[in-house]
Image 1 (tube, rainbow, N blue to C red):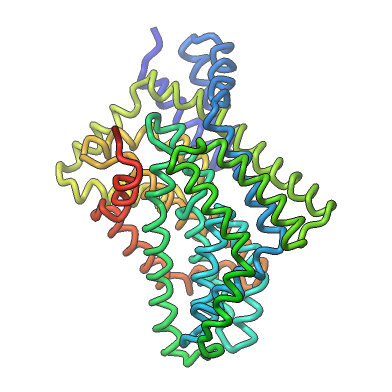
Image 2 (cartoon, helix red, strand yellow):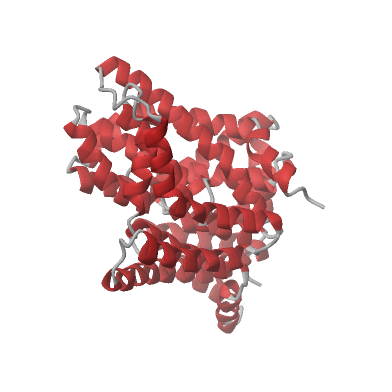
Length: 433
């Protein structure tokens, strides 16, 4: 009879060894699953059935729609309109362009739901503008990287949909609502940091505030901002499911990009669909193999073993939550976001639930943790995008990011130990029955 301990060892060690050897994460997960199932004597057709079952989900259909919508809005001329709105609102302050960067990322992230799209789209505009006005190149790049993480928290976010699917009975609508205040909190914290940096380095102010300019900028950007309203109002009121809201957002993005902002060409449209298809193919492959991997974790009782191990370290709730955050931060540094959500959620969610944490709050904490990983070496995707745009070495950016890491971890600790920041809006607008 196969030994469960040996099976767990095969599963985890094969996965880690293949990942260290730089084998694509989907293949690492899939091969580890196959090797373990062969050792256990389970029929391999069951692996195929589990993979198909993993992507045969109605809620998962929201992911491709949100990805396409984000691509279209990012390439459809909305960036300039949002920068203009942010500049009209906060550009008059000391370090005005840094403030614009923070606010603009909140707007754009709420439309695209992608930190990478935020950095690529806004960074290519704002980083050169900031450097031209006398901001340090490293600061200009790093504040762009850090503010892009708001896009993962402020809805819509396809990573929240993936978490909700893996976690089970978690409402996508409640997750969307739960991310709003944490996203805004992060943005405000980075604005405060930017203000002190502007005072220290005497960064310039922008044009004086004008209500007329602010109203004009709002009108110009209104159609793009409506994307957020369509999704949020539809989901919260029950008019749409998350999947239907995502589909409507695609139709709206096509209308706005072609008919209103006129920043989209037919060639650009096909490029957006191509980019979305590449992203979606990676996500679906990961979801399918991770479904089989997750089933094996449950079959081998790995979540219970991890929970027992964690709880044996200490029974202090504060220390345990700090350890879980540290683990997620570490994983975010060495792996991409989606596979961590798919693999770690079944293991860590039972632990935090035993500590009295709501699954919705944990979802926000997990996504925030993994967002920090996106701007942290050695596998920080967004960090590499920022480096490519600014032509500054990753090592230099990472060193200069240390104070910003401190700000983000402080916000993370507040979200961990103050549940009201994540749960007040969903409890108020979408109370659980």
